[in-house]
Amino acid sequence: MSGFVSFVSSGPGDPELLTLKAVNRLQNADAVLFDDLSAGPILEHARAGADLVGVGKRAGRPSPKQDHVSRLLVDYARTGAKVVRLKSGDSGLFGRLEEETTALITAGIDYEIIPGVTSAMAAAAAAGIPLTRRLTARRVQFVTGHDVTGSLPEDLNIAALADPAATTVIFMGKRTFGELTRRLTEAGMSPETPAILAESVSTPAQKIVRGTLSTMEKLIADEASDGPALILLGPLADGK
Image (tube, rainbow, N blue to C red; front, side, top):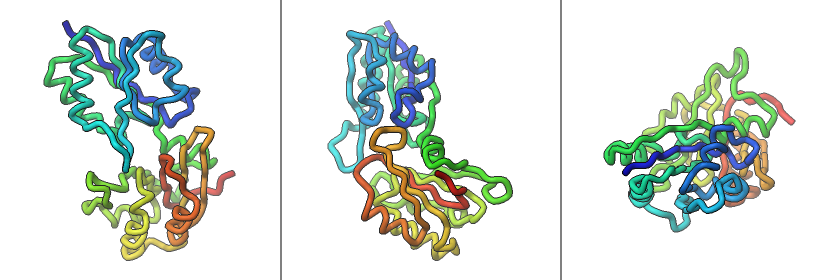
């Protein structure tokens, strides 16, 4: 007997940003395996009696191993359960989605992926700006600020990131931003390039800090908390 797994993207944290399909899957799930950032009020949509299992991974904190999470998904589905794998933001962006879908494919278990509001879009909305601008920001690039070791990835395309006509959104980049700043400056990016730190977007703990490439490292040291954060760089519009 085989169940079914729904990979549900929970958005950046505000339960009002859940899609109707996401709410439907939560209300009908037998088990919900959720990330830390998908907990709290979002789980209030889960039906009474459903198994709620925290499997979130946070930098610097004890976390379940990825193979354990994948094995749980398979084990629950093999009981015939309807399983929701609740991931923060959009599950396809730096969410290790592929490892989990591969485990399901190997086990012969069907699944679906339900997209959601990525934290990058929510951060721009919170800052009151667009991610693209006519004539000055013709493309958007999403990158991760650390690799599996916690260091800045060595294979980042620094020339592309230093493009003055692109908006760059850096996920999980607070600890490595100083090194990234040095590489971008060496590649020719202006120290006056606008920068925004967006923490805990769409939640009561939301914080938006504005600066430049040259000032953001100190702003992170002085004002950042341990909440999830994005850093936006590029020809950003003035916002509220």
